Length: 231
Length: 122
Image (cartoon, rainbow over all chains, first blue to last red; front, side, top):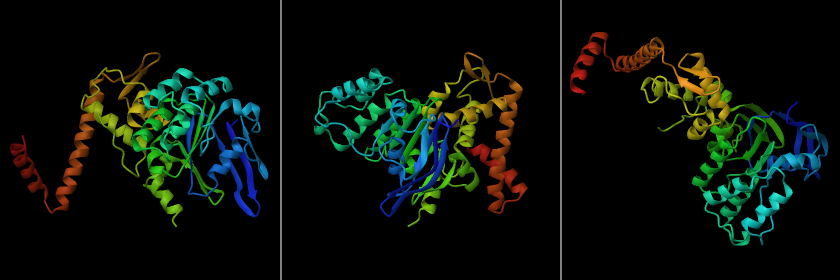
């Protein structure tokens, strides 16, 4: 059974169709890129996988379960914007994660926070935008989860941090987990991906191994993306 | 050692080429233990599955071998390494010859210039 199963998923907001009959299954042991331009439905899809939005029709399951308590236990989610209380310090946020998630590895989080030069005693409010993003990513990646749903993990950080994040994703790789990374910064992530899913106006237009794309088309995923989504 | 990936060529073939070069140039000497898949993947900044796939292909080609518990090693088979050098030399020579023919040199001119430049490029 696939770790994530998305079947005929449609989501409407009023008369806007954000997701249109999406069917995708993702196996464990894979790092998958969810690639699409702004407004293509990436965040909506990830929010449905997290149970933050309900499908209009169709279904999603993680380990066979609909999003809920059982899936939240095994899903590490990085939202596209800050969802943590910003009056707390990095240390306090680690306390929260430790309380909430059995699979949270405190030592790992501390090591990452130190690597990235984040002050553990500073409140989030006082951190720069990039530092806030780094901190959230540390908390998420320090979980030993079965599913990582990372909504734009590299969008707001500098290139050195971007490298650190990608290295973290690689070193964190485990064959039981699936990592879904949504982004439009394809050139940066493409060497890390097994599969890519292109999403355009709420529809999946391509689901393929990244190396297969390079092999068959003789061009990078980034270049193909620019063709498919040409404005 | 630096990894540089080009666009439009599968990463795994580029890994195979780079690792082959490292073995041919004895950057990884015969009998050396290779770093783990994860460490190599981290170093190259690539997906661990892709690295695994490339190493499996190198193993199939006989350039590396696995020992059940202790990891992967560079082959010690002299014949394999000799074939590898032969194959690379042929490939480079083909590339060179193709370029020289393109600028209008015939075989005699190419042979003459090989001798000439061998003297000059020390």
